[in-house]
Image (cartoon, rainbow, N blue to C red; front, side, top):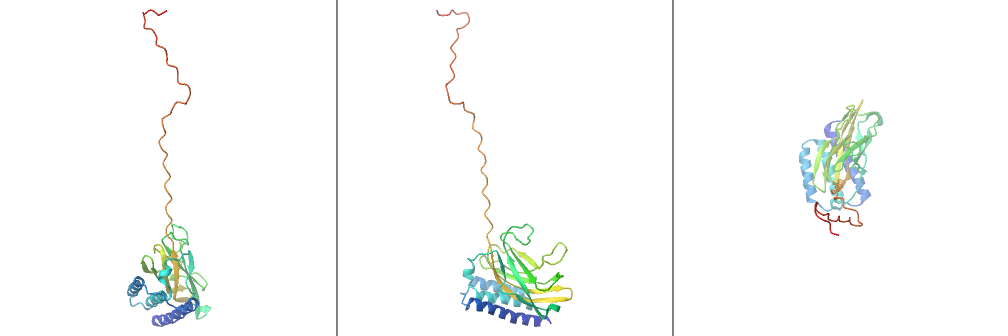
Length: 246
């Protein structure tokens, strides 16, 4: 299966997948969003002549026509799967077509960008149905934050401490609602899995407000005498050599 055949299959399967989402959500009647359309055009130009990347970006563009971008800017969530499991070709003994479940995670704080990325970031991940540990990842995600306009086309190239692919990638999307598509290739011993594009919606929360600084202790006031009877004033003493008054 060459690149063009894969791209054609990806486009066909993706249209079927988005059609299934359309059937679940009703007729597509989203209002056009100029800033989103402009960003999709930029992502298409960035994909260039790469047929697989163009198929992935086209899937993302079709998804923006399906959803109401204005309403997406106000939804919330932490973990969410992509809209449908991506049909996958070439995974050997599991049959001609298998699936990959992809997801996005935004919950929690983790300085190592692990399973719980820091606020303002979004971690994409893929879970193939093929058994065993992957040897290489050629997965790619195209994403667009519809609130702040940030976007990207990023490889899922994070690695484990044993230099094996995690099939994940953390992107600095900033807070807001992110729409994305994922596609690509995963290498296994004796198998070469080609993932067709899937699409999804994810919400990245704002970073929590910093805790207010603790007030500094004011300087201690000087000690004051305890309330009570005022001390007696000593009587004047006669000067030496003077006679005392009787």
